[in-house]
Amino acid sequence: MSEVQPLFWCVWCEGGGNPTVKHREFTSAKAEAQRLARANPGRRFVVLAAAVAYVKRDLDEVRFSSGFWPDEPSDLDDMIPF
Image 1 (spheres, rainbow, N blue to C red):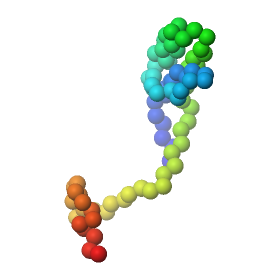
Image 2: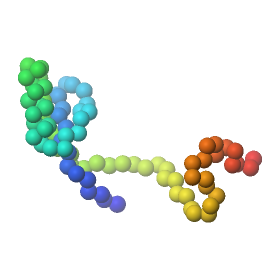
Image 3: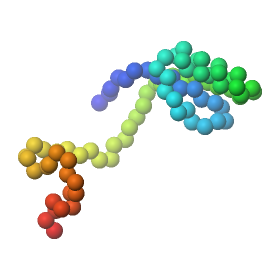
Image 4: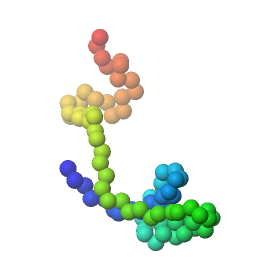
């Protein structure tokens, strides 16, 4: 199922680490790229816009309303009869 989320921007430095901040506004990301470029002469900082993301799921838990499950089980091993 496709889900639409708000667009965000990141600043990436070529040859540097991975982006860690999601900017909600383009102007914020642009200002950060300019600040970093001034503080790191010769390094190139790129403003990247999010386009699409993917998530692979291996296991989803589905609970049925039988009254079996407590709201917050403290130890599920105690509930197994063997």
